[in-house]
Amino acid sequence: MILRSARRLARLPLEVTPLAGPILVGLIALGNALVVWLGLRALASGGLPGVAPILRTILLGVGIFGFFALSFVGAELRAVARPETRLLPNFGRALAVAGGLWFGFLWLLPLALAGLFQVLAPPQLLAVGGLTTLLFVWILIVNAWPLPRGMLPVVLAFLGVSVFPPAVRRTLLSLALSAPVGAGAFVLAAILLQKLARHLLAPADPPEALAPLSAVGMSGLRSNARRATFQSARPSRFRSRLEAWITAPSGERLEKRLATLRAHPDHPRRVRAVRLLLMPTENPRGWLVRLVTLALFLGLYGFLAFAHGRPPPFVHGLLFGYVVLAGFSSLTAIPLARERTKRHLAELYLTLGLEKPEEFRSVIADAYLGILPGVIVVTLALLVPAALLLSPSRSLTVLLAALAVLPPLALFLLSAVLHMPERTLPRVLLGIPLFGLAYLALPIALVVMRTFGTAAGALVTVLAGGIVALSSWRTSRRLWIENPLDFGAPDPRLPL
Image (cartoon, rainbow, N blue to C red; front, side, top):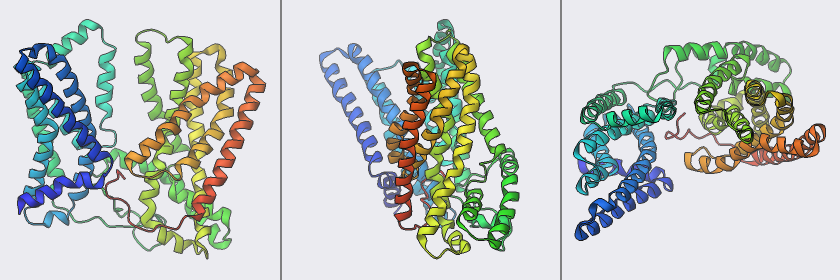
């Protein structure tokens, strides 16, 4: 019974990711098979030391694919570890067996192959095994706890090491490959895994599911009641206070707009009220917090980039594109936000009192336009110090190009993101060309202004971008209104 349940739990990540899951598992299995084939041939011919670098490279690729596979394993772990599923008989044992199967396939098998074919010396194998175990457990915690910014310390650690002198990097590498570090990493990984198990399997009642309108007293429920999410992690006290500070002005304005809407119901007033309801953080306070967060991250990135010397002039445009990409990052949250509010659309639809579903869809579509001012303001505020730092002599030209290209670019990306699927793999695949365009938009505008002159180039950019953006928005809005309403429950596998 336990083995059958464990096999079922182990298959769940593959069933809920019918494309990405089997592809990653197939690549990992292919990499392991290739290591076995090359290793056995080398053993038969006595040339095992010569093939060790190739085996090491293949196993490194297998480990990278394993890191990606842990993302959907952790998301599915978060989905199944709920208060109602914990009541099933032997659920904990079956979950432990399923986790052991994945752990053995993603980590134990490649590590065993590395030891069998002498890819690493025994002390190095212990160190690599401990550090990779710690990294695997941390990635599992990031996706299953979940910790939305949990990978940031890992990224910052790699970036920080990149600016160290070569002698320091060699010293750190030799220290990391020592046996005591590996043993300590194993102990720390075991402690973190125990904390994750206690966190996910702790007894708890299902959270109280409330609609967003309860925050303004329209549904007769307490405004401070907990809302149901698919996360078992509670936000920190600092995060709760920060969110309360950000959303306080929107709550006050929403009360007034709802009173005005009751007295004079029309489309513009409905849009303004729904905009505050769906995007309560889109106000000057929210823009400020987003600006400070991005400025700190970009400042650290700039420090690391300038650590090896000032970049050449032809790189400046690409760095400006990176700043634009960071400022537009909030647009990527729209598919997840749309999925999160799906359960509340029925109450919102009935509350607005609209006769036709098309009118309701048009209100929602126009409300999403409220995210554009914050995106543009934050991106411009980030570009000002970047332009002054990278090219002071051309800072006015850069800002003029930004004023010409950012509004139409933001509207065009919103038109595309409005229909972007919420699942991870399709969203990433569709987002690569879209945000690649966002990355290159400002450098292209600078090239156009250099070719046609500042004024003429800015005019060409505004006209071309405006035509494309407005036509895209009209088409996207029409398709959005024509789609049927979806009042279903959100996908429990998504990081909402």
